[in-house]
Image (cartoon, rainbow, N blue to C red; front, side, top):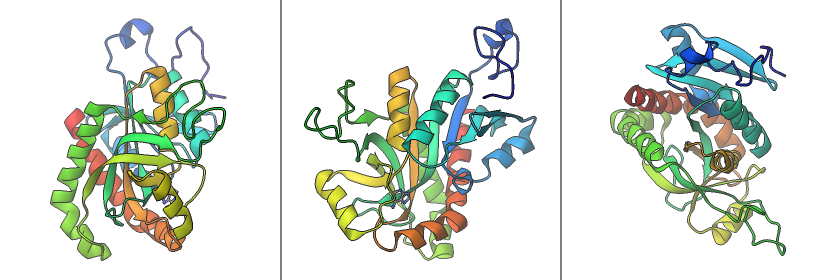
Length: 275
Ligand code: ADE
């Protein structure tokens, strides 16, 4: 339940302003990550820039304010497809966002996708969805879709922010964290309610979905909800591990030491350009 009362037919949480004022106000961008480290300095940057209204709703905190010049609602989904779907639904229906960007880490699945690389989703699908033989494997029953497209314009802007980040900061990051110079990839991101952490599991994903670049646990759920409500979305993932037996350790280290630097650098560029 929200801590702020819903009094009218339109939910007032998004602006706190009378409806006639809200009409002229720009609708905010929803910015999500699963875990705090994956958001980088975004909430701190919002606080530094001006007033932040934090609204508790459905056991999550939604921070409403301006970051790098762009009106945003920033929140954490927590882990998994249900958590992500519930959170993005609230962003759409309670906070009236006009688009969604999700940032975080993922396991590398594509053969040339390395730790420290960035993947911007072109399409997303649920690798663990299987209602066969009633429906084709991976297809969302009754929707007739297995692959959801990210919004092309939003994804292109996100990719441009990533390219600029890599160009300006990639070499220093690679030296600091002993990784290869990062590269930006665009393509298929797959999601499921499993942390993939064995050669057998990642090879099974490669065999089933040869064009998959990265695996994570939220993106396709967000893309499906956004598709159903006609809201543009884009998803960016930094590769924290290669989904093999080393994944738990690699993920944990990357999350704590590096993920925030990527998210902060990418989102700052993206939001400044959006303005
Ligand atoms: N997120 C980061 N690494 C992951 C992995 N190996 N499996 C699923 N989600 C992830």
